[in-house]
Length: 248
Ligand code: ADP
Ligand code: MG
Image (cartoon, rainbow, N blue to C red; front, top):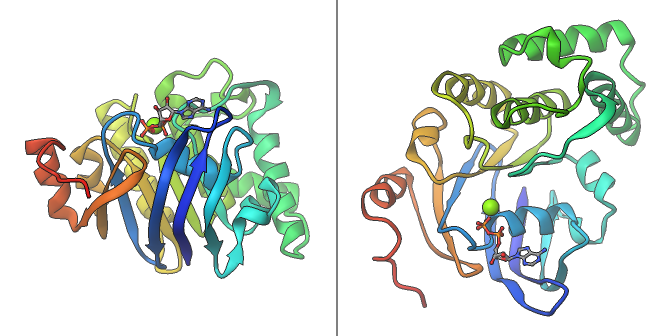
């Protein structure tokens, strides 16, 4: 479904950050990406999303066979890609729920569907907010405006729940969450997941993977995936760190 082949990308001064990433994500799969700070995990998500700070030097990224890299950012999202960033942006003055409604309706327009009626959207939103145990205070505040770190992460998963993407790339969604919030958010992600969808989780900790069982675990270091394995790899990393892995 999401196919990343030999992806290389650099920043403005020419430094190459991604040095040939290969990743095949199929429907129903959960991929965990781990790796030391500064490896290129967040860069990978931003390059897939189309962040203007990065230049793709080589390789391809396709979603259901469509070339994502040649698409406008909004079309990537409308085609079913969702990226939750490590540091969610605050947008003061833009009502959280109105933002979600507009985002959902533009996605529906892209798919040739009618906009969701206000009452139907309200119902959908209430249902998803209840699933994430978010109270009404978050409805009418600006997007992430003054939200705590954990509240922002929860709000990102609300966006995911409403937009119902095919492939979600969640960058350190567990950071800043307290123990209860972690459980609630992980439960939410599991609810959104289905055999037709896939999730890529960037995380440093096994505890998220206790709730969301990964199909594969990958180690990204120095811009490359240097090792892949099953769920047991995350346990080994938690015990032994990254230094035992040989890079080729
Ligand atoms: P990770 O998410 O794995 O911790 P990042 O992808 O954020 O790592 O960063 C990888 C490396 O690339 C780091 O050394 C970071 O400083 C550098 N980098 C990423 N984006 C930029 C940028 N826009 N400008 C300068 N350096 C960047
Ligand atoms: Mg990061």
